[in-house]
Length: 449
Ligand code: PLP
Image (cartoon, rainbow, N blue to C red; front, side):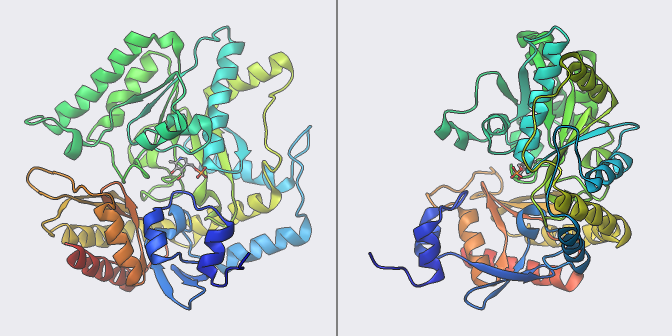
């Protein structure tokens, strides 16, 4: 057996890449990252890249934030182990829960920890099933989500995800129902106004509830802005339309804020940006500024009380992960929230947003960019073959993949998602770094089209 020598060959020989376009890495090789500084990463070949996606939306304070590193080191020195079971919990976990409750949009709340966003969504579904069964409604199990929603990769969260690729796994499971995506530009009918489009989505929800029966539906999960679906802010008045319908039928609304939580849209929570209060929040990613794998379910008062009653009834909530509420993760999360609140990161998002939007709008003048869209520091440019008819490109290697590959050649990492190029810069990005990002992306667009 020959032993591979290059980093690229070693990576391909012994590791499996998820969510990766294999023709691209077979032709171009992989990027093996060694370290990062601010919004830049560096690879084994000595190349540097400006990361326009802050890791996977999560490295909001950059890759080498000294305070976050110090918080992690301090907790590793104090107590790197964990106890999250059987009546035990780390002091860091207690403090983080108090902090999360304080910054949540809820008057009262309770927090449950996981290691990822997928697990947090799965946990939330189990909580709903558990409390419904305990309340005498074991049939109240169906889950409503949306086309182009992304909620994770575990069996339940993948079933919630509204992307066709999950069919290769035989998913979704039965009982996971995908409603329309609130993307007016793409899905609005000819001659339909945005208000009419939103009203149509409201009617679809009403009809679905009537067809399935409210007493069979456990919850409605929605990202305030769909992220991995291609950065899709809701159509005008969307949440104002669906929230009263859900309330009327007693269906909890769960805001999946794995991307939008902790400032991405300019407020602490995406639900604040869009003016609604959900029944629970799913959090991960920015929760630790990407420095530790951690997720959380934050239950608002009604669900917290009902879950507690259900657990009291059998004297236990039989669910939890080995590393739930890991003290190092909790210490990092406490620091991450402090950084977001007290190092001006929220203000940065707000003050950079107009600059970011202007850059997107400039690039959308390209005849093959059909639409730019975004909220706060998350944005997308959607490529089209024909701007008037919004006809997408075809071909096996998507045009967005070619744009992203060309950007990589220019030392810029941005994400191809469907027909769109997605940008989600770190909250510490400066205007000159944004100029670099848009210059490189603009050059790549010229090269590809
Ligand atoms: N929910 C949303 C909105 C996400 O964007 C993601 C990941 O991108 C997840 C859930 C899943 O999180 P994880 O990858 O940590 O399992």
